Length: 207
Image 1 (cartoon, rainbow, N blue to C red):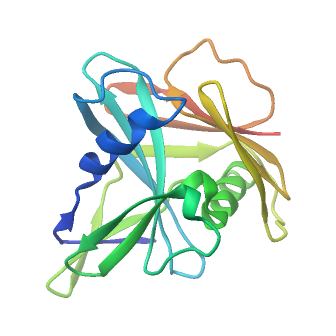
Image 2 (cartoon, one colour):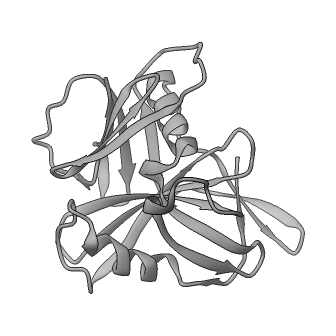
């Protein structure tokens, strides 16, 4: 379960995306018009790291997939994946990372795809009261693997419009530009749906 807080954050998520995403080799579209279309979250089993993937788009341009991790302290050895620090009115300072370089995200993505998992259920906390929240993006993995060993992060590299994340369990291909039905990639998949896209969209592949 992912817990959302009624809070003020600075910079906002779309502000940091508009600044950071256009500097990445996979970026396509108009950086000035980027808006958040929806998002989905994974659980950190230890409850320490927030894991959120944003689907963003500028006008009628391509859908872009931007996974982020939020941490309460810097991740050792991960300076190249640090996007910014964020001030959160409920949680304090948060270190925001490109999740592709975060081992907690790699483990969550691999486990969801290979184990046939879904996005984390959401609850919002305000004034000590928690209420369920409907996710704006629904995802599902196609795998059926029940027993998963510990998943370690081995390597990360950008390849065209994807980011390849090599783990000890599988090689993951995270599509940065999504919604193109011409993709034909073998392996177990993560697909998603959101408002205006009721047919499953390919988001990532595990081989």
